[in-house]
Length: 242
Image 1 (cartoon, helix red, strand yellow):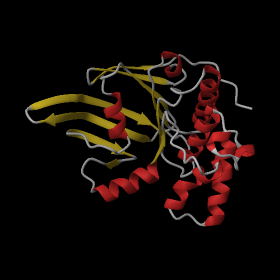
Image 2: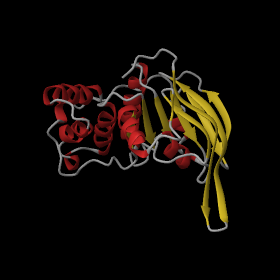
Image 3: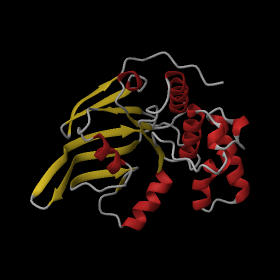
């Protein structure tokens, strides 16, 4: 994880996305512009159909804008060949999903290790990085547990460790507390807050105002537009999970 220095991690300039089916066209994004510096914790909110999912797909290099500019750590992503985009995505972005997306027959250790296997990181270095990532989310004592042996909050913390292990520039979290009870949600948010205080850049999509208010900044979407971009009043820290 890079130390926070105020350098720009994400930059969107007049990004538009139009989906076409025959003669029908739908403008999912209609000229969205914003910048996310290193070390910021940004929440993206908006009702269904506001453009949040489309925006996240573009930020994660899973989709391309119809027009406009998207730069990830200074690199223009829109025109890159797919193989290069995939490489940048794997190196610079960590994903956390609502449904955890853990391999059910693999231990927490093996799930977290997977991005490093794909990146061909040497075995000795892989082991230390996996153990460090699991320790960072409070799961040092769960390395050999299967997902079915973990609570929902522990599964999501495992997914966060997997997102962190490749040392990305930004973590993109899509409704990371959506499947959790209130205690487990607080657990996961506490982990994200501590990571952010340690320098991690986080962009979190959520429907929950309570979750969004744990961020330092809230972007609100409506009808494909960015309708507000406001800082959050400093909030008390959530206790670290035990």
